[in-house]
Length: 133
Image (cartoon, rainbow, N blue to C red):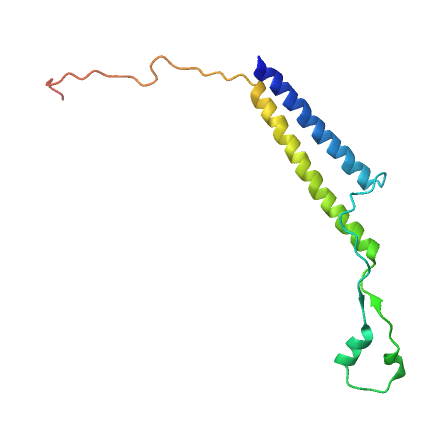
């Protein structure tokens, strides 16, 4: 009897975890909720002046001397993409844990029935010393 109660509890909590993680992921994708902020980096800038001077032959072009530092990718785009990817991975792990809980509950709920045959292997009696064709 206790196995059935524990089985129902595990099944209920497993399905609840899966549903809540699915709802959370839906809210993140529809922008009703922000993903957890794991990454917060600032703009990484590259000094193109030093890059141009190291790669190009020396010239007296004033346009090449006044190049300012620029960023390769926008900080918010990089952070949002990384945070969303990590959020999806973590929700997958949580949903997998909910699946394991629910499957353990189902295993506890199932009754195990074993049917044995009377004599599964026919036994033939051999008489020692009898003539065999």
